[in-house]
Length: 112
Image (cartoon, rainbow, N blue to C red):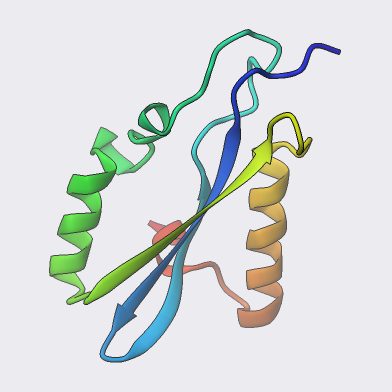
């Protein structure tokens, strides 16, 4: 099996508002389709993964203003590279399932 030459990522977004921290989005920056291709992934390729084709910076700035968010923490987990071999959809699904098992619902931004 040919290894993917780039990396794929799972993303977690947490907002800080009025001193409270809340996980608001679980996603991925790239699909596993075409993993056998020799295409190098970059963060830039994962930027346009929000609703209406908005760039991440524009989307997040609008959300921060609308929801009065003081800060955002964004965590990127490499799921597939030379050291890791997990499909991003699989890792995203694990995170979403764990969140759902605990809270009985999906994170706020995943429902949009």
